[in-house]
Image (cartoon, rainbow, N blue to C red):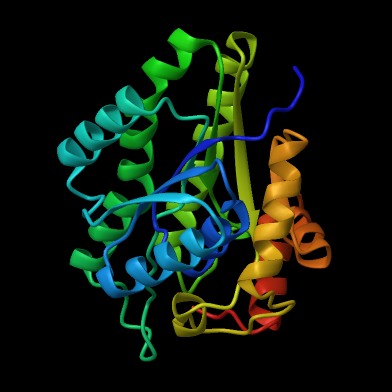
Length: 257
């Protein structure tokens, strides 16, 4: 299937570092951006910057953990302006704490609702329209943490592993119908969420660089878009090495439970 530049693009988590950078990267005359975010000031600022580049922008300030509302909104958007590209980017993180006391249950469940349930709900909402049209592209933002769980962020690692597996399964199912599904697995991308995470952050990338890499991968319909290369290779090896060796390596580089 030949690549056609998307004209109608929905991005959740558009007020985050990667989401905002992707919005700005796709903003251009003739493009409609539908941007979701929970920070109204940040959302309006991104919208204004995208409009300055010639894009039409529609903003929505809903909470993706309200999955019935999320699905209703996504269906309504797709009915009004059939979506070419949907990027499920909304995500949060938590950790075991500086005292290693563990993740608060309320934060862990909120993380599952945001990172996994909302992603699946968005896919379920937009998929019928794409299947009927026989085209479309769905992008799921996972993480290199999906390859091997980090001791400091167990729930985050679990949700991103689930998103990875979900996206890979969707791709195999939907490819014959003309629908592209891509899993994005970033390493460390500069953002408040990233900086709040304990442990070292090797090969830290700015969000704009990550957005460029993601867009190139989507245009080529890469099944997995993972970066940066050294960290990508290293985390992949963690997944294939014996668990005892992988756990030792992770502890040596500073991720200790």
